[in-house]
Amino acid sequence: MSARLAGKTALVTGSTAGCGAAIARRFAREGAKVVVTGRSEERGRAIVAEIEAAGGVARFLAADLSIEEWAETLVAGTVEAFGGLDILVNNASPTELQRGPSRIDAPVTRLATADMESLWRGALYSYFWMCRYSLSAMIAGKRGGSVVNISSTVSIAGVEGADAYTAAKGAINATTRSMAVEYAPHGIRVNAILLGLIITSDVAERLIEDEEAGATLRERHLTRHGRPEDIAAAALFLASDEAAFITGSELRADGGVTINSRFPAARMHGRTAT
Image (tube, rainbow, N blue to C red; front, side, top):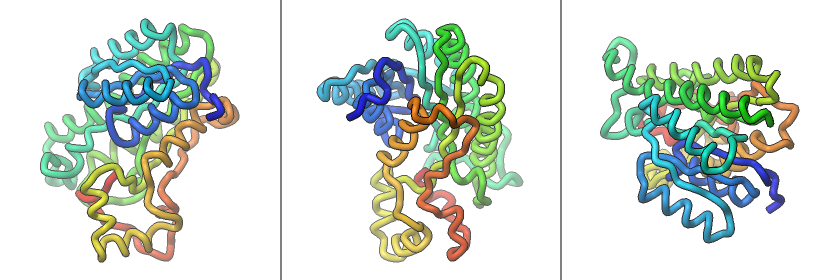
């Protein structure tokens, strides 16, 4: 690797699996000291061990980011462990509440306020809290920084039955822009990646392998379906000094789905893998 993040400290939320884990691994290979965090200590420590076995530097700090105090503690622990914070990747999101057996999202006419607030605590409030404490740490460190918010293409396309989740992702896009303006004087850049279909689970793999669903997905994509490593590459670019000219952007990492006029908008609610 080219050590594009040498000398930098990166905090990657939701990095015990999926895209977050891929980002943590890639950042470590590029020279960053990485804080891996999530609710599963077992998975988190396994990612750290993997990074260290490859010669990288990492530490696991447990956090439930649906609770504000955990966000504050997580950032403070990162600064204590590595002497500062240069990069925040806001990746954690309660996907189990957006799809699958634990799904609570729904059309607004059937969406209970308590369920909406529960989803927003993990999908939106956690982003605000992590930015609040991370940006404060970056300002105190006086060496600039980069925030990469992981959003979704559902924020720019209508999706049935996911009104709370799409609202959260749309808010993340909007505040990415406002924070980019607010914190530019401190040398801090803020960008977002809008994820399309990313194959991160056995369920998603089976969806791709299903003959009918797989054909539909292949037709929808102009390139191919996404992999966690694709998101890691995009996050690496935005976090690195190579993107010094870029802030307030919304990078679509979706295989061209949202611009593909040859195929009608997908209605994959409950089966998406972003």
